[in-house]
Image 1: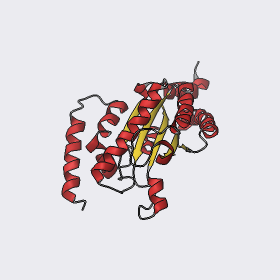
Image 2: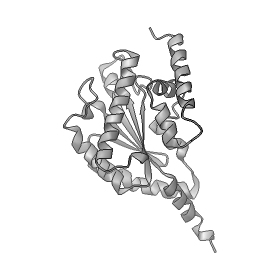
Image 3: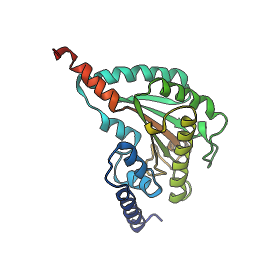
Image 4: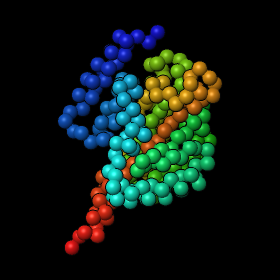
Length: 226
């Protein structure tokens, strides 16, 4: 039985973990804290703001600059759709979300990438390296089969496996933030086989970094420059 005391305990542990990071407030550091074991539950229970979708939406700058970024993301999304035939590629706000059914990457209850995952991740890494001015969020999710603690650990391990593979393919680790949300963010109904399958997934968010945003803002104001 998942009790309020258990949730409260995880919440308090998470607050301490985040507080121990110190005063630096970069997205990478924030993501690293949330990506810790208890922190993943905190992100899942408190808000969706720390998920790939939440971060993409929160990073939007809007206006003409946002439209410029959107056009660049359109091009990147089109390439990903061609290369990642078995993954779901969505344009979200000023970013991109790629969703892999965990069955494409992992065997059941495993966090080691299976051999068939390499083609998908090789293609993803190639595109990410082609467009270096983006940050990448990797979220692991599970269904609710098994214990909450096990699912949280498994989801973070899977996200970390994807991160490690991408870094080995040349994607800079400074661009990547990983989270493990376990069963806390279901996409579908866990009472059905199809629903549980959809909930076992890895979501990858691609969002403009500070450099891309600044360049878009300069291009936005270009017509008014003397």
